[in-house]
Structure formats: structure tokens, C-alpha cells
Image 1 (cartoon, rainbow, N blue to C red):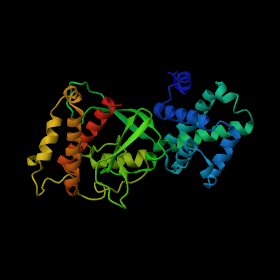
Image 2 (image 1 turned 90 degrees about the vertical axis):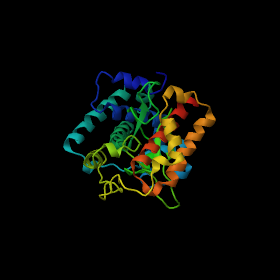
Image 3 (image 1 turned 30 degrees about the vertical axis):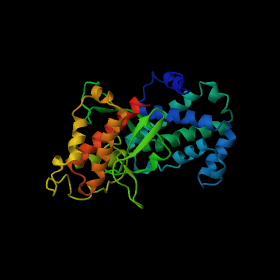
Image 4 (image 1 turned 120 degrees about the vertical axis):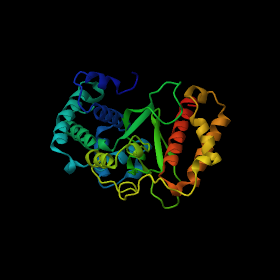
Length: 315
């Protein structure tokens, strides 16, 4: 409630926009931009330079971050009529909301200033689809450590992560930690390799979702055709491989952690938690050439869960 954007969200709560998470995201982004660009004329001038990348070196860190987000590509020409219809009224509602408060109505005073703010809001609604979905556990501490019961709780825009491409077989996963986004490597990334995340809440979930459903989500929500190893070939979770992974010591040690409850896991000494983390990383590095198979996916999920528990315990 003490956050600078809270009153703006409360003011428009009664209107309840259909895309309320995107609406809240744009509200927060505008509030952030208004803080890092205290002078409107400088803000306008800087945005004009954004379009040709001039004078970027003269900006501070926060302004450069905004530049990275502002330059994200929009897909205006790929949106459906129903999607396009929702943007103008939501833009108008957002603009009207800001004009109720002195942080904006005493700062954006000229016609040029007001038009700039309207265009900026409209632009942010177009690029907001580059958001990342943030997730959290919804199960109680008596649940198992195994990866389950995750739910989305917010959307976020991050200068680095929003520029990472999607793969259904990602090599990086992410999760929120307060106002920050933590990116963790979950597959070996060799020199020259591209970094990929999964747009499906940042975690690998494809063995429970039909390929057709994933392709449809990429096409309708993100406007591209996924060409990862899963979507571009017939290869999908092979059942035959040359090693019995379940008999390896690494796998057995990792499954030991997987059998615990969250409550028991949280009580483990840090050294033991680090041991389970190291076992999972070694397993993924050693058997990366077989991925994706059920065992590597399972270890992925345990590793991500361990990181999430680390974050909440040692924040």
C-alpha cells in the first residue's frame, strides 16, 4: 500500500478492466518512468532519441532500463480486431486515472505534454505482451518438495529478460524475488549458444501439455511460431535410452529431496540444501544430451523448487 502506484490502482479498481494484470503492469511502468524522468521535456526529448538510439550513453541506469523496454517490438499488425478494440478504451481509462493526481496533472500541463503521455500509454499497452509471468507455490508446507501447485501471481517487465527468446526446451528459468527477477541456468550454455526461457511461467511444462496447445499459445498470445526441438520435429519425450537413470546415485540422492515435505526441507541445514542443489546440477550437466526425457524434466523441477525455497528461506 505504500508503493507509489497503489493509489492509481485503487482509483480505477471499480472499473475492473478485463485485462487487469496488463492494466496494472502499464500503470506501474508509467509510475516508474515518471520517477526516473522528472523533467517532462527531457523525457520527451529522450524518447525521440530512443527511436534512433542517439545519446543513450548519457542516460543513467534507470533511464537505460526504460529504453530497453521501450524499444521492445510491438505486434500491432498481428492483433485481432477484438484485441485491438480493448486498447483505446483502456488507454483512455489509464490516462484519465493519472490526470486525477498532482504527480501528473501538475507535471503534464501543455497540450504537447498531454499528447505525449497518451501516446506513451498507448505504446506501453502494445509492448506489454512482452511481459513475463511470475509464479509462486500455492501449496502448504505439508506438501511435497516436488514441482507442483504453482500459480501465476503477477506480470513483470524486465530490461534483460524481456529480450530473451522462447523455447519449450529452455536453458534458463526465472522467478521473482521481491522487485527483482532471478534467472538461473538449468541446462549447460556453451560459448555462442543462445539463451532461451519458457514463456509458460518460466518453467518447463511441456510433457503435460499437447504440442498443439503450445503452438496455439505462441501464435495467439505471442504472435510467432515456435521452432524449438519439440515443436519443429517429431521428437517428444523418448522412452528408449541407453542408461537406466533411476539407478544412478545422483538421481537417487535428488529423489531423496523430492520425497520430503516442504516443512521438513526448510529445516535442513544449508549444507544439505546445497548438496541437493549440486546433485541436480551435476545430473543435468551429465545427461543433457538425452534431454528432454522424464528424468531430466523431473530434476529440472526439483532444482527450480530448491531455488525458490532457498529464496524464501534465506532472503
